[in-house]
Structures are given as C-alpha cells and as structure tokens.
Amino acid sequence: MLEAGQVVVYIVSSTYPHKMTDQSSLLLRKQLAELNKNPVEGFSAGLIDDDDIHQWEVVVIGPQDTLFEGGFFKAYLTFPHDYPHRPPKMKFITEIWHPNVAKNGDVCISILHEPGEDKFGYEKPEERWLPIHTVETIMISVISMLADPNGDSPANVDAAKEWREDPCGEFKRKVARCVRKSQEMAFD
Image 1: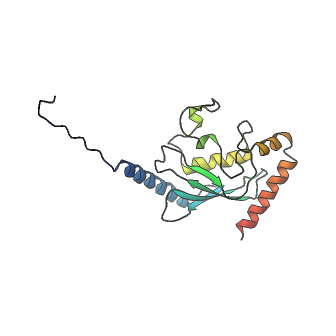
Image 2: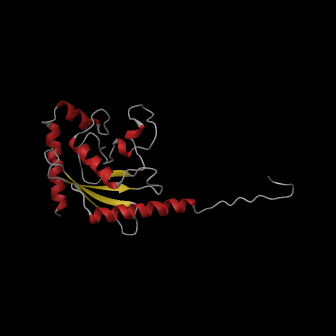
Image 3: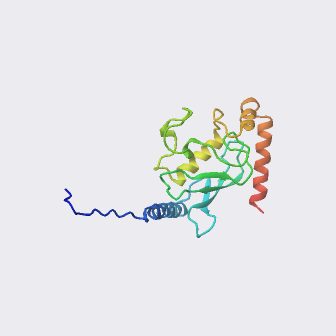
C-alpha cells in the first residue's frame, strides 16, 4: 500500500526487443547446428550471409515420384526477429510452377501463415503457425506441398487450374521445364 509522499518508479526496459532478437538468434543457431549435424533428407540449409542468422538459403530437392523429382529449387527463408512467435517468409528464387507458390516465388501454405484465426475461415488455428515449428518442420511441409498441392487455396491460380484440369498436359510440361532449369542452375 502506498502512503502519501511515496513515489513509484517504473523502469521501462529498452532491452525487450533485443532480448527477443537474442532468443530468436540463439534458437536459429541451434536449429542450424542441428541440421548441419543431422541433415534431413530432401533439403539443405545454410545462411545467405554468415553475419545474419535471420536470412537462410535452402535448396529443396524435388521429391521422388513427383513431377518435381530431380529438381533443385533454391529458396530464401526470412525469419522475423520475434521468431518463433511469428513465422518466417519463404520465397523460391528458382522458378517453380506450383499452385501454392505465387508467380513471384512466395510460398503460401498454412504452416507459414500468422498464428490465430483465419479471417476467411479456411484454416483452423492449429494448421497455422505455431511456435513449436522449426526449420525442419517447415521444410518437411514444403516438400509435402510439392508432392500434394492444395488446389483449394492457390497462390498461383493459373498453375492450380492446369493442375486440376490437365495435370499430365500443360501443368506437367511447365513443371518439367522448371526442373530442367533448376538442374542447369544447380551445376553452374
């Protein structure tokens, strides 16, 4: 209980944002070390710049028995400074033709959507970003997405239409061209 004449001092710390960044950096360093120690089949990961733990380069290897088999698809993962509370953004740098990858390369899957309720009511909160996700779970989801596109919520409407209407025709030809280009780029 305060008495007359007493002063209450609130200390506002300016270190909170830095603390989140430090925690984020530590977690990302730990995940990178674990991936280097125990690589996961289907992708490789590293830093774009050794001085920035929040910018990763990944190479997704086209999953076996899919149209993407044999491809080497480079992408960037950009982590927010409050990771793991918010998801990273993923963007393919290598051209890829897929219903859930926008024409500019942005990946659109539930696991990378901000946590909480979907304002369109399409996704359940547990399908969206959760802080328990890691680079490994993200990449496994992306590899799964390549093998099994979600045509109900496309980022690339043209690819989704071709995938639904003519998966063995124009869609297959465009994916095969992307796979060839990715192979040529991988060995440059």
